[in-house]
Image 1 (cartoon, rainbow, N blue to C red):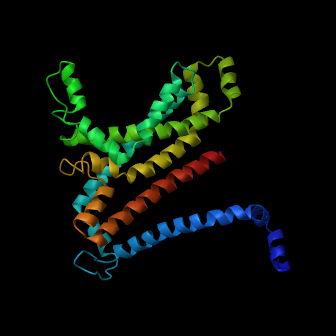
Image 2 (cartoon, rainbow, N blue to C red):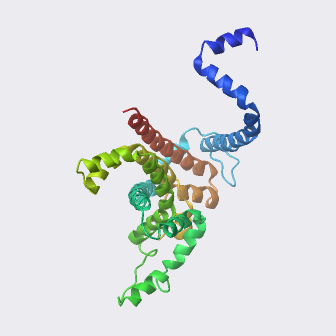
Image 3 (cartoon, rainbow, N blue to C red):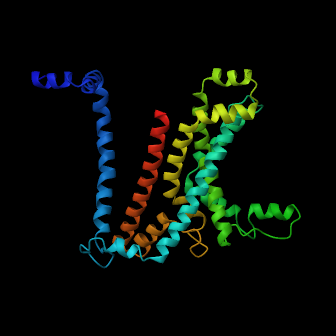
Length: 308
């Protein structure tokens, strides 16, 4: 090594630690680097191309020319965009909160010594393992108004009506939330289980010795210690929900009408159905900005909670 470089490294403790780690594990770094580079290229090139398209009026019949921010200006006057934005906000907030709440409840139950716990542990992971589009199609069959399994159960219970799960605009919104929560709550549960395992039992036992009942131990001991885990779950799930596509496309295709059309589906339609590549790319860029804003907000809260 060049003596001047060695002097620079020695003057910076972090560089010293990095260099020692690199010398020790350089074969591993060399093996991993091709995958890292491929992932970098696979991500960066489409992102740059999307930005480029958003600044053009490219379409199927138009090779496109540079138009600056015209697509973004037109988007601000697009009523359909704001309609899908409202649906996306409703879907993201509702699904994220339900997944977080149910995941916490399931995690608390699964960390208790209950009969048949092994069976429920396996059953809880099944939805997570099912492909999103396949899950949406199965639930679509179950939601059918005339011959769906759920409406047949309603009839067997003696009720003389059917529930329009995917034909009524309001029920369709509820249905996509149900499917999404069913699909993702197991993953959230695993995160909360990891958080619960990280809490020292001595702290909870000390609260019990002081006379705190189960609810008080959860409210004043367990949950405050789970705040970083909760913020992490909210961060990951809100970023995931705002970009959801498969469940909505497979279950309702954005219908009835545009009742369940979210931003990812709106971008898909502009890009692959209307072949307005520049405009579709613009919607995707806005969706990217929204995702980054959500991630940055929760990441800052997670950072602050860990430093308190």
